[in-house]
Amino acid sequence: MAGASETIKATRDELLRTRRDLKTALEGKDILEKKKEALLGRFLQMVRQYKGKREALLKDIKYLKDMLALTRARDGTVTVRSLALATVQDVELDVSMDNVMGTKIFHMKHSALRRDLLSRGYSPASISSRIEAVASTAEALLDRMLDIAHLEHNLKTVGKEMGALNRKINALEETIIPELQAKLRYIQDALEQAEREEIFRLKMIKRVQERKAAEEKREQELVTAP
Picture (cartoon, one colour):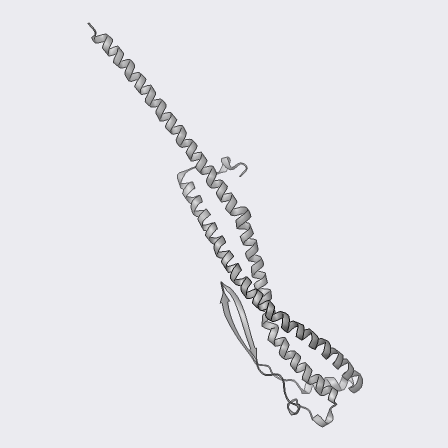
């Protein structure tokens, strides 16, 4: 509030305006904190779901890489690639959304990805057991990746929103609200000081008037005395 006396108008209107601004800031901070609390609850819930699924997914990725390297070495890269093209499948996604205090949370379901031996587009008699194991593991891996895709997206979205909320709450707590409170105190003090000065001025005027009236009365008494 350095130099506040040079810029703040110490008036009743400014006092009322500052009180309204302070009330709005406090209410806004309360709303932001409630939103942050709601998002935090959902965030922790998603973290628990994501953590377990991601750990399983990482194990599957390592296992698939090892199997794929072995299969390419034994069956040949060209064979693996041609069979991979033959097993392409469409994936149907069902995306829905809910709203947590203004933040969009997505949910996603997908069609079944795991197929049996006869549904992959190639003859089982023409492939090795290694290729079949890789195909089965890859489908299971993709299934798990889609299971956590929306969780990962939501975690990033909610985490980003919580960061923005923290910055807004900190700005209100550390800057905006203290400045409004200081401004309010300054205006109140200035108005109280002005009121004391006005009361003192009126008392002085009253004393002067009383003294003048007393003098006039004495003069009148002297004039009318015998």
